[in-house]
Amino acid sequence: MIVTDGRDVDALMGLLETWYRPLRQQRPAAGSRASLREDSDRADDCQCSERFLQILWNEQRLTALLRTHDGRRVEVISPGTWNVSGGPDFRQAVIRLDGRLCRGAVEIHRTAADWSRHGHDRDPAYAEVVLHVVWNAPPGDLPAGLPPTLELRPHLEAPLRDLLDELQAATYPYARQVTPGACAARWALTDDTTVRRLLRTAALARFEDKALRLHRQALAVGCGQAACEAFFEALGYKANRVPFRALAQQVPLQRLRALGEDHAREAELFGAAGLLPDPSTAPVLPEWRGAIRDLWDRWWTGGGTPLGLAWQRAGSRPLNSPERRLAAGCAWLRACRCDPETWMTDLATACSDTATLRHALLDSLEVRSPWEAVQDSTRRLPRPARLLGLARRADLLANVLLPFLQVLGTRAGDERLCRLARAAYLDLPRLQDNRLLREATHRFLVPPSRSRELVRSAADQQGLLELYRAFCLALDGDCADCPFTTAAGTPP
Image (cartoon, rainbow, N blue to C red; front, side):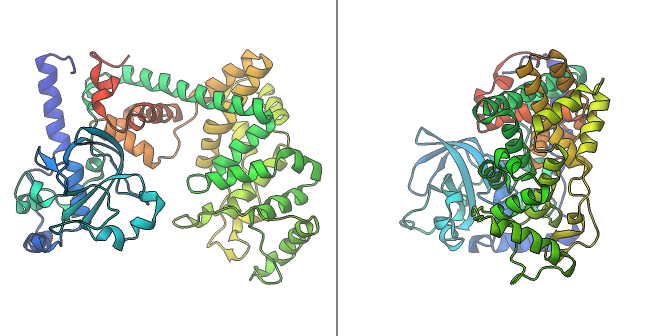
């Protein structure tokens, strides 16, 4: 339990009541009452929206004694984190089934039959589901192959009409999709200076961990090759990290250096990636036909074979197409002359302070290319756009290039390079937000708007992500076993 005095508790409860439950006493807006009444009237007919059922699960507005359809006792330790992308509805849930601890995902449906109707029985992404939560289930046995199934309708803590009025799906805020952890009380009672120090400490731990993993890879495959693999993986962003890393591994620096010429290297990478269209059959843009024909001829005459990489395009912005990302990788290889180790060492040696180093690295990634005007060789963009925007370049510095500089300093026994890498990392301005960062903010900070004062730099963001990764994600949201909850006092 958290050790506080009475005044701290009163202040904290007032803060939580003011922020976390702003909608509890609000009545539905005039425009929404008809739909709420309709949902209520049709509830027994299984017409509650899945979103509303997800809200019920997220809020855990359920009775204390829960049992699955086949009679097993269910204890919810953590409902999981609401998943707003593909896959099961809640990730990293922790439950007990008849006393057996289960960690995995939770999927929400209106009826038990929706499991097979939605194709989850054939989708490997749903193999991790440990609990299937439905509004109602038919009497008797359920179809074979279903995960343990919990029926919500008999387990509500209040009448459905009251819950529909209180938990309005149309206005349910993101802040409550990711509920505060048990440690949020400690964060709320800790002064800003102490929290910032904690974030900086966690940020340096994350930086050292990245550098250590990169160093281990450098020992296995060489320093330059390790940097190339990390750089290409980062180019893949979220959807294509795996194929980009595989491309860097299957077309290594040694082979690219042997080609001796930038166009030959570009042809090798695009051809092996399977991103080089056949100009005799593909509808290539007129202005690109000559360039694509030249790349195709170089790759085809060299006897190249596509690697069969699985590129993910669904839900991706046109600016983040694999072709544009790979063109950025080719441009970086040109800039460093296929020798990342020498390039980084020379650049850092010439810089006397962190600001100079940061600007030099950012400038080196600001490449110009004909690819700025297109999504790929068959589709133009509405307007040209840089292959790597400022935010993406800064992200590459934080996650790849500065950890790489730390590795080079460690291997050379050059403490100046190590200090320069760490200082430049701590001085990086704030990076772009992402889903994990938003989850971490809502998990730790009450109210989340406190992040405007606390999370001002890239290092602050990295520290918050590191704490979320090391505690919330590592423990699957199980606050009962988390040091932030069980230890007395305030964060160090």
